[in-house]
Image (cartoon, rainbow, N blue to C red; front, top):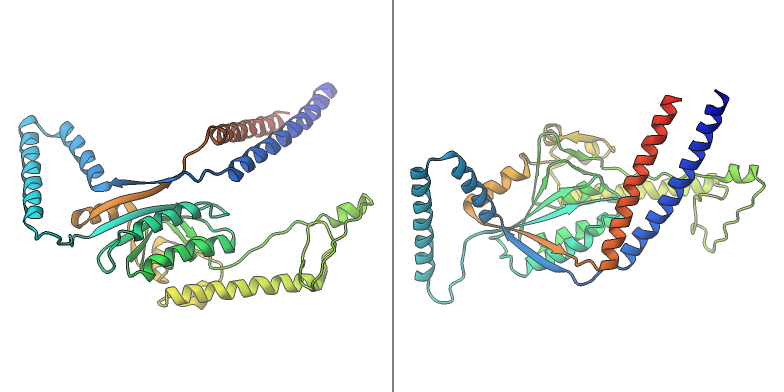
Length: 350
């Protein structure tokens, strides 16, 4: 029994060391990827009308009999000829007045890493979008993150509204904190019934190892020029004065956040919702955080009935080194999870 206990302790130590090494290698691989991001990106545009029509036709091939399918195909060809005839009859140089809807995706992490893709996609769309006619739909998913990063993402979305182009934010899962900062810029917010919205607040968490270092007789000095250059630190001794300044900065950031939401979404009673709480779809609509409950799929299908709908994506070409880095990083993450899972299993078994 003693042997098993000692072996269990040895195994736990070994797994801890291996996990630490894997995490360091993974971090290095990720840093290499981020530091060598390719600038040879390009815009891809996909017609969603055609995509949904293909899906519909595929279903009909399986559901309708041969005669009914032929009639449907015949009607499609007839409609296409009519559209071509109407287009040909237009005066030379006439501008097509049919509405276009451009669909962008933003999948947010703590650093709002999709900022570059969003910036490039918006720039491309604004080169074509007609003010007062066209619309941009941003399918937004984010639980928030760094203030400056999400401030930039919100400013990118504001470029659309400033050009007089309609802007709709669709939230299927979550748009909280910085995610809601982005969403509130839109003319209209559409959310699925159980999407999470709100979290209009600011949070900061900082560990402090000062007492641990003191116990080990290790000194750590923080030298600054400027009274508020450093308020709270990880390794140094934090003071009440520094803590008060840090809280003051958080409160100021919160006030800026509240003002931003009020400016872009004046229907919201900001004092009722700016307490850091979150609301699910229907409850969010009750406090006017959203305008309508619907999934992005349903909304885009509706758009296809009256407009040409295009998904616009900025794609970065990855070099061989970047692809290898991603593969290594992903493999290490999976291996780490397996090791942690095995370690937890051993702990329950012992």
